[in-house]
Length: 599
Image (tube, rainbow, N blue to C red; front, side, top):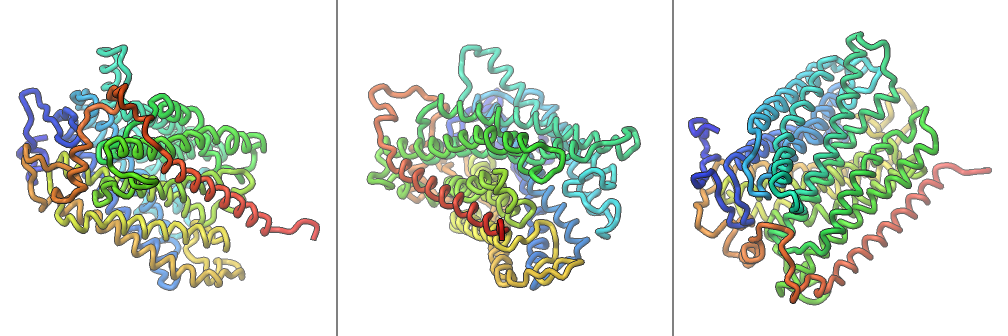
């Protein structure tokens, strides 16, 4: 990074002679090379979030048929732009930054192969721009050969440039991830008997899942490209769908592991959490390696050619291995927070450890809201719709869209917003341009998006509203069938969607405004707690609890973490399981109402 190009002063932190500095919040020894690329990938990710948010507005105002903003052909183009921006570009650029944090930053190492980080960034950006071009220049006629670009299923005639662009992007991601993998290689060579920190181990698991996903994408897009160009006589549609969903769903599985890594780090650094059991948490990450890819099968439940045994095995018995892993993290993360805060005298009673937590800290609040909403909305519905029989009432309805907004948005995006706030304070060394609005933003966004997702699931399950059709309430084009009874519900959907999009827009304004206009935090001020205000008690808590350089710090045998109660977490888990059971029974009841037997 040349200082001549650093017109905003984003890369001008002070480092020692070897290029390191010590973060006063995390106590990590941060090298210039790592910090600069975390900033670069993070800023670029926020730009893609802004682009995706613009198209979120146009899509929502189209599905809200009282407004009906776009024509059907334009709607699908906007839908493709939104999906690729939010599901792929915003999240994967952020995930590369998280890999650099979880690897070289946590380990206190330089970034190896900086050329790969730079080349990966350029190639990823080029692939993103090419994908935008191939989507935006496609014909708006829904009957044209090359209109559908969101999933680009074979044998639809898709512009070959789209497949080329996707392959270019995947190659860029591979290059960008290389420095992280080389960091682990160097670490294990130099310290063969040392265990990787938990967050680094989790990031490594995410990287392995990423390799699986990238291979699936290269086979799907590469095979489709060869067929489109005439180099392959055929490319079976069902085979394409299976390989496509390895990357289509796999990218979201990378999200899951990445945000869990962030949750462990944030609850430790900001909230004072302890790791209650290293072995149990690591085992849960390992379970993801073997079973989480099975979740992609729920996209194929109505595909011909797949046996019932294959469907049942993938979506039930095998996938439950990944569900079990998620349930483990659902206990260990809040349990670690409860035990850690009780150990430091931060709250008594059943939930005092939680009510006394630094809720005014947007980094902490974003992560905790993500944990709660991802679990209750995304996690439960994911298991329900991934079950063979129940999938029939979810498949390709608007409820599916509600589910992945509960996972990718309420889970991943909300978590990554907290990461951006953290990076602004601890790496860009900037005060928030408006501490009060920054504190409020996670509440506004999570509340609005939770209501939006619930409305999507409600109209999808109870009215069968289809997933990708621009007009459905007044009539389904080409039929006399009417779902006019859902119109009032779509009015509610439109209003809460605008509220949620406003919360997302506020995040972008605060992030960009803080980078451009936030006051500089000078080293040694002792004011780097990423909560936007050092005068609050929450800021003091953040600083005094946080600074430890290793999540696996040796436990004091005279004061073990297991000596402290975790009954609050136990009660929360019982509430979660009760909601799970009620939702499961309710969905089976609704399934029985779809048809009558023997009538």
